[in-house]
Image (tube, rainbow, N blue to C red; front, top):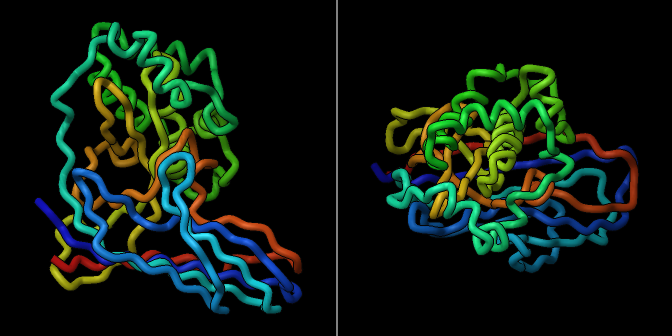
Length: 280
């Protein structure tokens, strides 16, 4: 099944005192690959800003913009139209020898390393190794994702944007970012290269053409088991037409949707919405 989706991601900020200058980076443009085709994208800001695009180290398109007009509010609207399809399991199911071969470890070393969000943890590693027994790398990705799905309770407010995989595991709950980080920690513990994916999820599987729904900023994982492929541990489902991917990296820190520096008063987010419309 193929869908055509319009995604409108709006973020607004209000500042305690006027901001005199700022520099910002937005990672909000969907990517194109064999499952997804970006048809059009646009980013607008209020106040209007001069901007430019570049591709970062991880292959993500970045819209950078700076403002030098004093302002007390900032609004960023990223709009795109993208065609999506289901992603089948890869035809190649590499052996453990393939995954652990020196050339594989060297090529994907950055997706095997530990980070602040995805730290090494002895007990989690032991659980991952027990789940790996008797399974291929591809099967291990699926069983680890299901274990994370069954172990964590989806709950907003328990964890924050800076919480690690261990924080979420110890709390027993979290959001999609935490599900992804915990899955990455366990896959890396058994030597499977794995990366964080940020994007959007359409929330209504049976949406009618022309219907607009409140979508979600979402996160899932991709693993390398002979080829890169994705899975959604939060919902325990394969990546399909409702998933729109934007960026990949080692963890959330590499794909933060909007970040920057500014001179002015404290900032408060006043609006963060994702509207998704099925066009076809």
